[in-house]
Amino acid sequence: MSQKTINNERVRQYQKVHLTQKQQLLHLVFKKQYSIKSASMIINIKYATAKSIISKIRKSKIKQYTSLNKKSGQCYFKKVEFFKTQLKIKSLVAGSLINECTYYLY
Image (cartoon, rainbow, N blue to C red; front, side, top):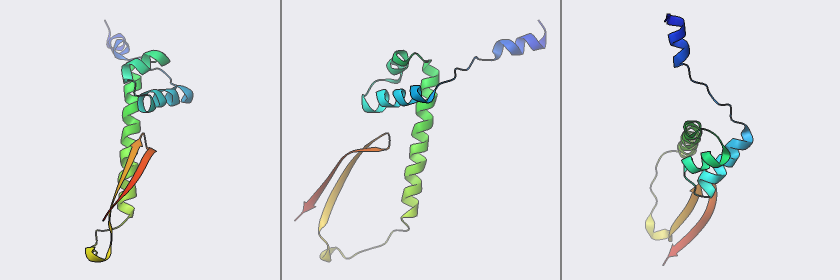
């Protein structure tokens, strides 16, 4: 075998995924709680392709979250005695807000 045919055998055939398929994958994995494997079988795309799409989205959301926190500035101190303590719980899935609760402690 020549070097050219050996190199051609190693090349993978990549699958082009349309935007609607990506949105369906995100909906199934993040909102409907499907596994990546079962969601890729439903949408009829390869598992490796679906996994790479999900990992890219997760990385972009993490970068987005860290950039938002960096904009808030440095840490600072406040006197506790003049402020009511409160607890905010936000539930995020795929970057979208699902639920938000605020608890005030007296």
